[in-house]
Image (cartoon, rainbow, N blue to C red; front, side, top):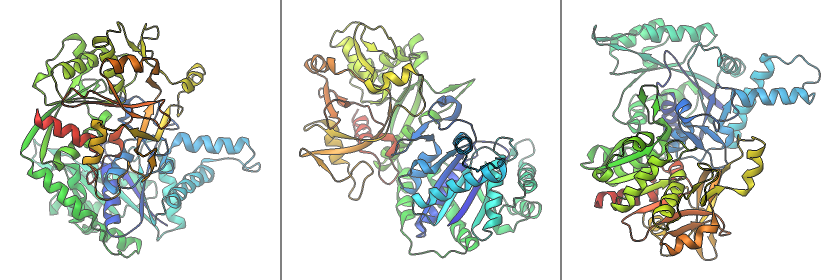
Amino acid sequence: MKYIFISGGVVSGLGKGVTSASIGLILKNMGVAVTNVKIDMYLNVDAGTIRPQEHGEVFVTEDGLETDQDLGNYERFTGETLHRENYITTGQIYKTVIDRERAFGYGGEDVEAVPHVTDEIIRRLELAGKKNHAKVVVVELGGTVGEYQNGIFFEASRILRLKQPRDVLQIHVTYLPFLKNIGELKSKPAQQSTHLLNAMGIQPDFLVARSEKEIDAKRKEKLAIFCNLQDEDIIDAPDLPSVYQVPIYLEDQQFGEKILHKLRLKARKKAHFLAGWKKFEHLRVQTKEEVRIAMVGKYFSTGDYKLSDSYISVIEALKQAAWTMGINPILDWIDSEDMEKNEVNLGIYHGIVVPQGWGSRGTEGKLLAIKQARVKKIPYLGLCFGMQMAIIEYARNVAHLKGASSTEVHPQTSHPVIHVMPAQVEYLAKKQYGGTIRLGSWPCVLQDGSLIKAAYKKYNPKGPAPWLRNVEFQNKSIIYERHRHRYEFNNQYREKLERAGLVFSGLSPDGLLVEAIELPSHPFFVGTQFHPEYIARPLIPHPIFMAFIAAATKK
C-alpha cells in the first residue's frame, strides 16, 4: 500500500481538501485504486457536536459517522462511497490508546506518544486502505504545519516514510500572497512553511503553490532552490472560477504521472472519469440562463463575515443540477434571524431553499420564508429541518393548529407536530449527544403518484446511482438516503394534516417515519427528512435538486 500525505502551510482554507480530492480523481482516472482519508486535529471524537460556523458543514457517511466537510469533497470528486475508517481525529486516537492502556493492552509498558500514538495512527491509515481495497491512500492532514496540536500526525507520516521509503509521498500545499502595492507574488511565506516542514524531518516531494494568479518561471525557480525541489515538482494552483476545474488544471501539468513515477507505480487503462468531468465543466461554462435561489438559513454569520461552508453540500448539489441543465444558479444568503426582524420579500426569487438546522434560533424567520413560498407559489425545497419547518407552517396556517411547533423549539407546545424520536429520549436525559442521533443511510418507500417519485424516475441516471440498491419493497421502489436528525414528524397529526391537503410522499418501510412531504397543488413544494445533498455528485446530479431547478426555471 502507498501513502500520499497532503499538508498545508501559511494559512488555513487554502484548498487542501479540494487538492486531495483532485488527486484522488486523477489517480482513479489512471486506473489506480485510491481512497481519501481526512485527519482532523481536534480532540472531538467526530464532527457531530461542533457548531457549523466553527468548522463548516458536518458531512455524514453512509455508515453513519459525522465527519468533516472534506469527505463530501472526496465523494463528489472520486464518486466513491467512503466509510467511517476514512475519518480520523485526535480524539479517536487518544481515546483508543487510553482505553487500550486501561485494559492492560500494552502489557505494562510506558505508554508514550512515540511509538504508541503514532503506531495507532499508522494502523488506522492501513485499515482505511484495506477497507476501501485501495492501492494508494491519500491522507489530508488538517490544520497548518507548525501548529502544536497536529505535530503527532506529521511525526507518524515521517515514521511511516522511514519504514517504507518507497511507499510514501509528501505534498505540501502552500500560499504565495499577491501584494497589490508591489504588484508581484511573494514566495517567502511558502519558503518558510516548507522550512517548518523540514524542521520536523520531512522533505516535501511536491509543492502545490496556491495563489491568486498563476506563478511565473521566476517564482518557480525561487521555490525550487529554497525548498530543495526540482522546477517540475512545483505545481501551479491559482484561484479558478470553479473547484471543478482544479483536477483538470492539475492534470494539465501531468501531476498524476509525476506522482505515479515517484511512487514507482504504473498507470493502468484509463477510466475516462476526467472526460465526463471535462464535459460537466464545459456545461458550467456554457450556461446562459439564470435562476435566483434564496438560501434561508442561520449558520452564515461568523463575526463580521458571512460564509457558506455550513451548507456546502447543498450549494454544490444546486450547482451540479443547474449546470447539468445549462442554467447558472445565483444563490443569495438570507439570514433567518434577520428575516424575523425585517421580513424580506422573496417574490423576486425563482426558488427558496431552507436547509438543515438545530435549535430555536431563527425558526420564525424560516417559517415566514416558507409561508411566502407556499402562498406565492415559489418552488420550495426543505431539507431535514426545512421539512419540519414546512410541516409546522402548514399546520399553523392551513390546518389551523394554533401554536403548532417542534418540541425542540417549544417544549411545551400545544400541538407538537414535530417531536423527539422515542429512541432519543433516553440519550437526551443522559446528555449522550455525540453519535446518538439517526445517522447514515436508511431506506425510504416512495409513494405512487407523488412528485418526488416522478423526480427519481425522470432524473435517474443510466448507470449506478448512490440512492439505489436495486431492491423492491412490496412492489414499490425504495431509495436509500442519508440522515442526520433527532426529531421527527408526530404521527398523531398525520390524518389531520392529510385532510388539510399535505401529502406524505416518502415513508420508512414500516410506514412509521415520514421521510418526505409535498403539496400537489403547488408548482414544487417538497420537504425531505433525509439529506439528498450528501450523495449528489457532479456526474450524477441528484433527482430532487434536478426537479427543483426545473421548477425554478419555469417560474
